[in-house]
Length: 385
Image (cartoon, rainbow, N blue to C red; front, side, top):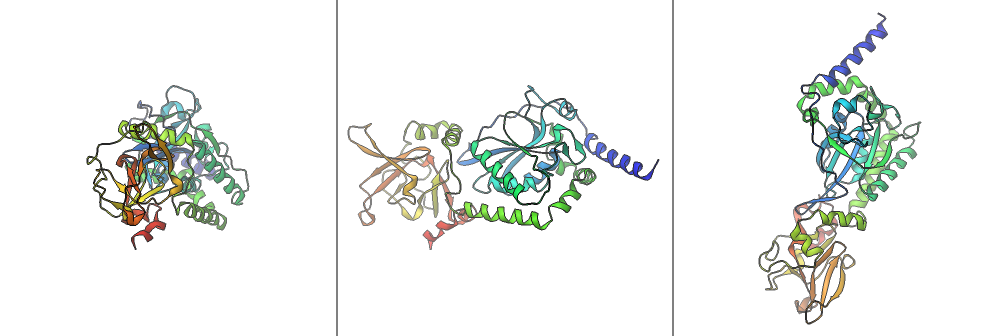
């Protein structure tokens, strides 16, 4: 057998061995929930994006280790079949792609940063798969869950095309998210469970050499540096991203019933039995959904009412004041774009203007002073000097 043929045979053998020699290959799995846009866990916002980058072992490994990523789950995205598993998807007889569903904290990272990581480990010009993995099931795609994600993905793709890094057209599709089925358990965190096996596969498939050759170019470094600078500039303050009403509604639906009762039904939590009425730690209080800074501990005082009270807001533009006629006398309701927050009264400290923002604890998230810089609120640290 000619030397070239022997080399090709050995390379393909290594790849096939890496892909198919794990135990429990064709186990059944349950479909994961279908997250549409941001969801809430406690007082923290979680956003979900689904990315197909060829073999999901590699996509998961790169994204899972990215700061700000809460979880990365390997699975099968797209298609209209009612279920999906490794055997059927890898055969190429379905419309599913190997993909990874990323859950991240938008206060710690941005979608733009995650897309930079995504681009930097794939060949975005390949229309037939990725490296040694061929077929539609290995083609690249960004499955967006919201209009904001679609806009960010398209902008990132356009920036990559304009960078001149690749001569061919950027083939990665930007398409709406439909379905996602979690892959078999042995595929999850494969790069940790079988590190040596994973590294052998990544090298044999050609991905390692491609990344080293293409993403170390001056044009690639410039593209990533430019995007990183732009992302830092937009994340430097509270207005780092615009929320559509659709996103806000989806986020609110993910909140607990107690929080929804306040935001949507304009309810009130019990006095002296809420998280922040007697809270004295230094930091800022932000909107539970949009993360806009609303109040600071430097403007907080004990009003003797049992609710967190502030004589000043950090962001008048983030608040909406409305006349509330639910009681026998008119009151001034305080709202954010997320919903009802509390009320504004004129019995506050006279030396500070006489206002009292009486706010429900459950609609606020507290960012401690020590964590403000890391969470993108460094520009507000002057409050504590």
